[in-house]
Image: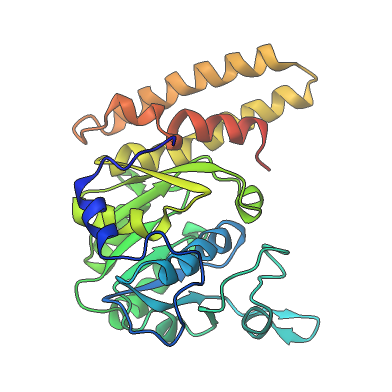
Length: 301
């Protein structure tokens, strides 16, 4: 009701999918779809996202049934975390109590996790990304497209470096970006929320929308990867200020002022450092902008 489908491309994709089926309704032994999904990163937010990917892989015929999740192996009470996930369909360390569909398979070997994948999503601390990319590039399907849900930015001698640009250059792939007001623990209990996917290639943007859009997660798309990505990183700086305000015992009026001023400074930063990137003012009114800023300042960790 809140978000009627407005995209012709997404509508066409949905017509060839079982968009009205319930999660898990497609048989696991069914014919494989043309798009194979993989998630690199199994922390709190990555686990919340792959839970949705698993449901949608079964809901839409365009996707292969199996969704592989790369997990950095850890021992939990003497047992490998990947083994626990595959036996219980739950990431007991990072998203306890939230069940995956059985088609989500945790894999400790990176090359195996992304082998033949046509759509690879990333959700891990960005400082661990660069060493992984050579292995990923060798293992994914030719022409694979990627999506970054990594909230942060990098730096080099010339200044700011976007994570999406690292992925584009390191993998020679088109990269979309997902950011929004998405507190993982709320998502795990299917509380309604929104998110934003920024894209450069419209077809790939709509494919990733189909992969993530769900009854409790409504996905909006914008042709603005830079604006979406910077919002996801910069809102954390404003949230630190909101935390200071809380610690000093100030109330909602003070925090509201911080959020308002912070949003203006986010916009100014984007326009100053990326003046020719085509950042749209409307992007700041999407879930990746003001909504993510609000939930991080009031309800985030």
